[in-house]
Image (cartoon, rainbow, N blue to C red; front, side, top):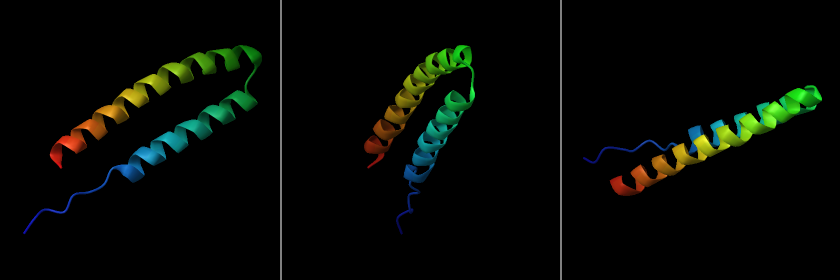
Length: 64
C-alpha cells in the first residue's frame, strides 16, 4: 500500500495570510517611524518567506 502524502498547502497559506494580516495591522496602528521599519522588515521577511516556499515546492515536485 502506498503512503498517503500530507499536503503543506494549508500551512503555507496560513503563514502567508497570517504574516500579511500582522504586517497590515502593525502598519495601521504604528507611528510613522515604525511604519518605515515595518516596511523594510516586511520586504526582508517576504523575500525569506518566498525563498522558503520555493524550496518546499521544488522539493515536493522532486518527490512526485
